[in-house]
Image 1 (cartoon, rainbow, N blue to C red):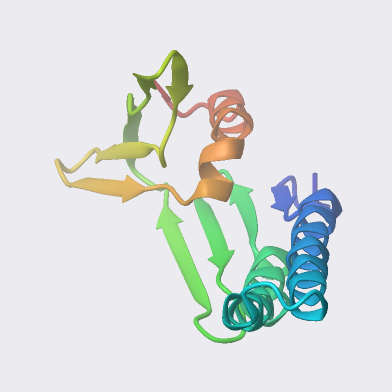
Image 2: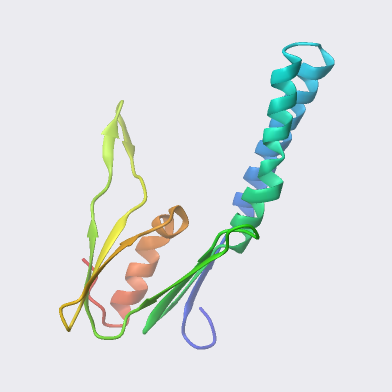
Length: 153
């Protein structure tokens, strides 16, 4: 909670650590294959591919955050290459309705990014495709909005 009563959700260090471990594992595997003369072209391609993680993925994870206030939600995502900032106005909001997106596959529940339908008092509607970070934290955001008088279904 911020000083102004807002809810701040930011990318966790654990996600940065996990991506760092993936990078180290891919780079080490590529180096091992290169030194053992096993599929050297594939090893080189894997190493070059692994460099995308610290160059693109980790800065994006570090930058992503969601700031929720009673009158708006600000979602910042993307890295240095494609930064993105989305502001969702919550003034005159009648309700937020979530569309169920989960489905079963091979006995597991798969949940892609969620969809929120925002309905305003003047009849306007807005469809909001939540990114993976927002989808993971949508229940905390919904509870914060409910506590401030918004209807979230």
